[in-house]
Every structure is written in C-alpha cells, then in structure tokens.
Length: 105
Image (cartoon, rainbow, N blue to C red):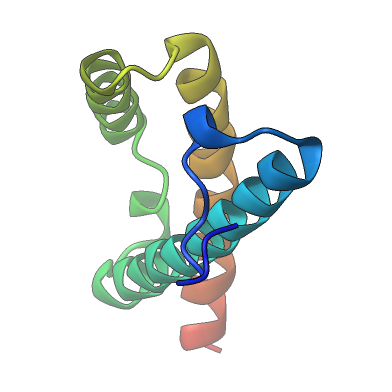
C-alpha cells in the first residue's frame, strides 16, 4: 500500500494482501457513505406525515433505473448493482419504518 495511506489502485496490486488492503479501505469508505444514506432515511421518516408513504414502489423503480444507468456509464456490471441496490433499498425502507415509528412514539 502506498505511504500516503491511499489504497493501491487495483491494476497495481501484485499480491492478495494488496487486494485485501484495497478492498478493506474501500469498504470503510462505503460504510461512511451508507451512514449518510441512512441519515437521509431518518430525514424522510421525519418529513413523511403518513406511515404508508414510507414504501413507494414507483420511487424504488426510479432509483434502481438510475443506478443501472449510472452503473453502465461507470463500468459497474448491472448484475452487481441491481441486486445490491434492491437489497439496500429494502433494508433502508425497513429502517425508515423503524425511524418513523420511533419519531412518533
């Protein structure tokens, strides 16, 4: 791994240790981003006045379509992005329901 603590670019990895260090660093970044996404779910729970508004099938499909389009543009296989985002959305909706209920308890 380079001295500046930045993960090594995948194309420069020579060992599985290099790969694993890069993946671990990336996972830490992904967790940090997911913390922010989770905070948006809490904000949505605060803003939505009706519990039924938490689940929005049209919005789910809109998000997935945008993710697939961005995946294709950026070079990520939709075979990875679509199921990952569908699960992420499912779990975020569950969290939003929990937040909605907690904020009104």
